[in-house]
Length: 185
Image 1: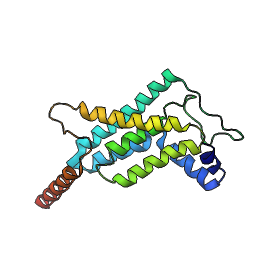
Image 2: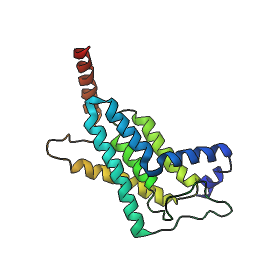
Image 3: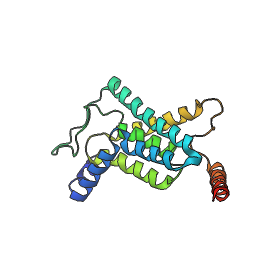
Image 4: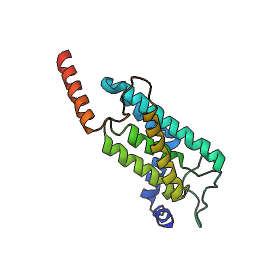
């Protein structure tokens, strides 16, 4: 944690960590991505909305666990945290929970690699900012993945079997969308 915290001495890194932390606050960036996807991708609207709901569920689950575990946030020696936090408990990281959930639930719909990269950067930003222990971030990301997997397993009758389509299903969805656009235009 010290090595990442030392990165905060660079003003550019500190600024990026602040911006990433701010964007991940209360899962805001992921909720916006999910709702924008649902608004613009008619062929997969239900998957976007379901994925967005799972991101929200992961965030809420992490907040509930924090109230039970009540682990205090780290107090980095010699420096103040880069960002303010909504609460004083750190385990698990809610930023990491929503980011892990978004990478799985939304990443396979479109822009998978950029979303996964953004999710990873948001997770690291919490360490650079000095507001989480590494175990908080790992546990948060694992919680987000678990919520998505449980949500996919507990789908309603007749719903698609995957929140995020596998490669073959994604190719079929893309082909179907191209065919539908060709029939309309």
